[in-house]
Image (cartoon, rainbow, N blue to C red; front, side, top):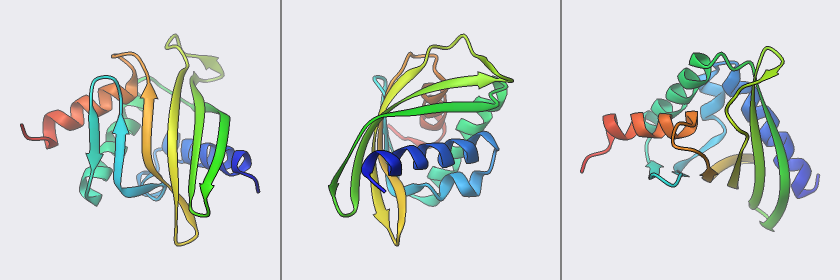
Length: 147
């Protein structure tokens, strides 16, 4: 598989697991530490408990919006070396076949190959303040991060 195919396959499988509410499978796509960045904050999940809280929070946000599918489209992907892949993609949230009013958003992801499995090392999101990713990270920060 080339970089684009690896990235698109990863995005499809990770998105499906998340929308299905499978916390364990969703966590399986995440490396530790895992850095998640928005314009509002940089969040680094260093432990399994922190990553679980973020995954559970994001799944909760998706469910509260009644998301039934995430349409993720890889825009560009490049293998930086044998175990590092960089990719940009867009996400559109769907509820029962209809796009949500929330605009699609762009992201940049760094995947690392760990024991033969691609995992998220870093994600940067180009999102609005009320986007479900931003709400998840805000809620996480309020509970887990100390000043």
